[in-house]
Structures are given as structure tokens and as C-alpha cells.
Length: 231
Image (cartoon, rainbow, N blue to C red; front, side):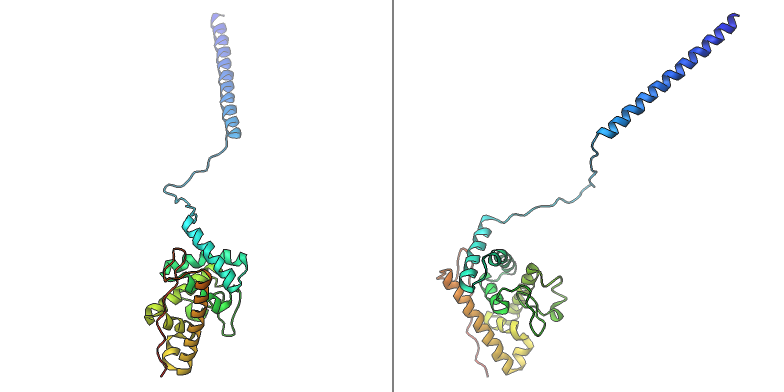
């Protein structure tokens, strides 16, 4: 009998321990479930992930942009919103390629009169009237995008200046191309006429902004070399 009682007692104790362990297991599961439901998951960031740096224009850049915008509105009758939007793009691109923002602004006036979506009969596109078939390799992207178009036009103008050696000839190249300028008298005359018109726009902008020297703290004009005689 003693053995039977002890056996029953042992079984009862074992059952109690088993229920107690189940109870503890339930508490453990419940606590983790509650934590999982109430804790906001954190996003795991990859190691060495690049940080996005937001660049804000410097006060000097904003001042130059405002100054140029005023000139575009007064000289070329560009709408205020358009002038405010395009002036920073003109200055940024001109500075990047080491040319005068005033000259670039004059070229845009000559090419498109600040109409972003104009297309010529020859297929030239946008503000700086880029020919996609000739510049596709160097100017990728949508040429109807104002920033892309201005950057592309500035790149072309800068490369022509390096090729020509002076701005008057570079402007003529921009209009008729180096080959046309060199090989055809009529094309050369057309190119020089174009260059003269751009120079007039350039000078008008200088006059509006009251720049009486070849350097300005806001936007710098460019000095032109007299056009060579046409033979």
C-alpha cells in the first residue's frame, strides 16, 4: 500500500509539474506575442549605404540668379516665373563649363526666345535648339527637359569655343557648324550674322544690368574678338 500511495503521489506531482511548465510556456509565448504586436519594427539599413545630401543654393548663387532673372525679364520680356526658373540653371551650367551666363542667356534668346518646347523645321529641340541626330552621343536624356537642354547647349557652345579660339567664331559654329563655316561662304556669312545678333542680345543684357566693365560680381559678360573678314 505504501508503494501504491507513493506511486500515486509521484504521478500527481509529475502531472502538476507538467501543467506548471505548460503554464510558464504559455506566459513566455504570450509575452513575446504582445511584444511583437506592440513594438514598431525598425528598418534595417544596409551597411555603408550612401546618404542623400540635399544641396541648397548659396546666398551668392541666389543673388546672381535673382540678378539675371531681372535682366531676362527687362531685356527679353521673359515671364517672371520662367526667368526665375531658368536663371539658376543658366548660371549653374555656365559656371560648370567656364563661360559667361550672360552669353548663354543671349544664345537662348536667339535660339528659342525662352520657349522650352519649340522645335525648328530642321528638328532642333528646346531652349538651346539642340539637334538630337548630331549630339545624341554627348547629350543623353530628354531635350525637352529644361535643365538637360541648357546643359547640352552649354556643352556644345563650350566645345566650339575651344575649337574656334574666340567667341565670335564659336557662335557662328553654333549656328552653321564648323564644316559649314569653313567650306561655304554663304554659310559663313550666315554664321557671322547669327554671331552678331547674339552679341547684340548680350550687350542689351549688359546695359539692362548696368554692367560697365567686363567683370561683374553678379554675372560676367564676355569680350568678343572682331569677326574675320569674309573672303
